[in-house]
Image (tube, rainbow, N blue to C red; front, side, top):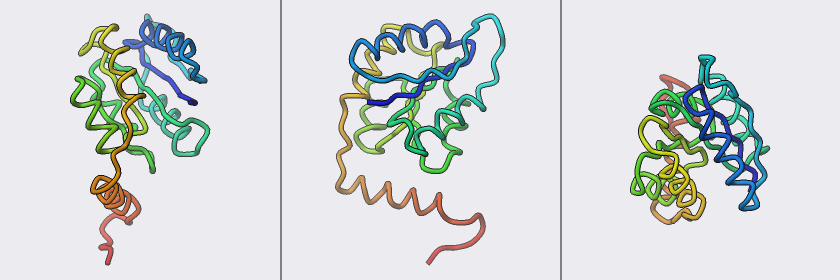
Length: 154
């Protein structure tokens, strides 16, 4: 699987470890930054870059690492075609992949430990989308996304 990876200054250490962990498991990883834990990094451009990789097809999935993950999940979800989920527990990960077919995972490094993060990534990658009623809801979300602001769809 092709996985795009990025993190702000809060995620640098885990990003390095996670990238190696993914490669060890046979995934192709594209790390687009940040790489300096001492330099404050603005996360919106990084989130947009990996999200555009997923939306454009050059990556199958993306993982974003930030402090809380809240701003990152908002930024990622601004990219058309992205369904980013915030991964703070096993339940959240199972729902984001199984029910919502999330294609971008966001981890708050101030929320979960490195060990928990690796476990959550493993679960996220192994959880299949359930389809069925959930696909209908994904289609409804896509219709909202495709609609022009303020213009009702029929």
